[in-house]
Image (cartoon, rainbow, N blue to C red; front, side, top):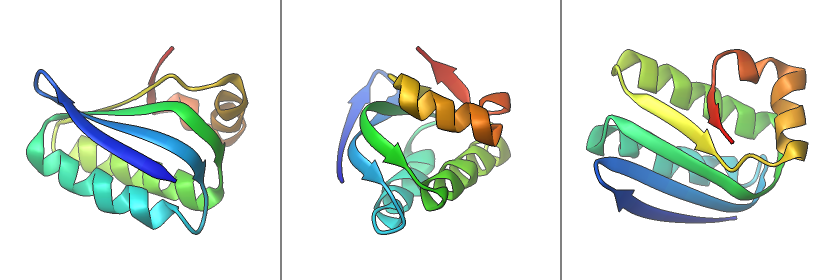
Length: 100
């Protein structure tokens, strides 16, 4: 998995490419949590995400909790239909902010 970090205005953007699996989820955790110390708006660009495992969902939930506790925003962009189906089946669409 590859994560490219950029800044757009006051937002931190993490563009993710590859599979968000048990093996790679820690990499996202290591990038995502410190991003909330740098900005109150963190955008996850999911255009290049091919797969999300349960470990990846745990990282997203942790990110959501961190954002909520810091009165910050965590926004997912570019979510593909296949990944959206995972979010719908797991109920993540009920609390994640997903922009298409």
